[in-house]
Image (cartoon, rainbow, N blue to C red; front, top):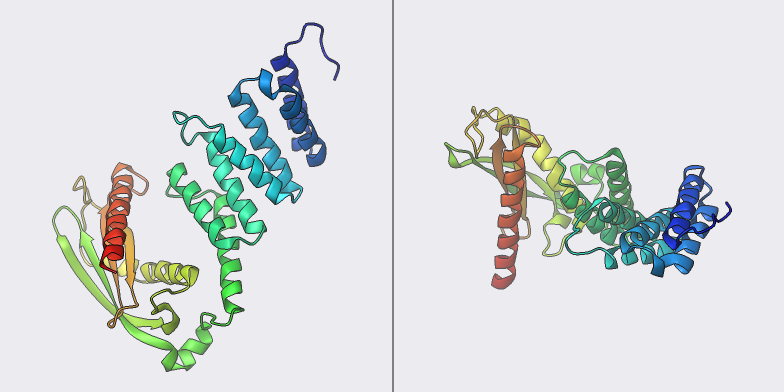
Length: 292
């Protein structure tokens, strides 16, 4: 595309960006990345930081598609460096967190990938994840489980644990429900847990999966125990916000699940409950570290 007479630096850069965007849509990732690089090298000093920040973000997307994950991570870090504090978690920053998780997964840094995806989920502030996020999280979790199963101390497979009682321990699952009427209503269940999860430093992902499955197993029964009301507004509750805390390493293994009834999934009361429980669990963790 020829340069127009009197065209400004920003005008040239914007025109090139449009060309690179079109190439990306056409899946010509190498050519697209090359033009983004041209903009950065030749026009970065003459353009607004916000514009160049978007160019870095777009080049990271190209590099991911090309399998250049380390280079993409470098671009993502540059995006964050150029993000003003007042901007916060805007669309570009959100994409950067998701893309970082994707890169870390691809290069085998699975725990870091999961943490990056958790940050992405937090700043998106959505109860229902996107299809892309769900797919990536599933791929990361499967990869970690596969890795743990192939390690020297794998999580016992389900068929092994059911046929070998010594690989399981009995534990107590306590659900403490807090609504506007019943403050601390406790429901108790007894079940079994793989012994490998009952250590001071259990494998992170199998433990998280176990807690998710545990909550799902008893959720309906807890909901049906009584007519719960929303913890915040007293309207009839339609669901529960669960925050299970694992103490499976103790002499008497236990999982304590702090549950709050909410009137609407994803509503104001739901979000407030999640934020409050997150802060309380952070405090519990800090106190636990001091006690240890």
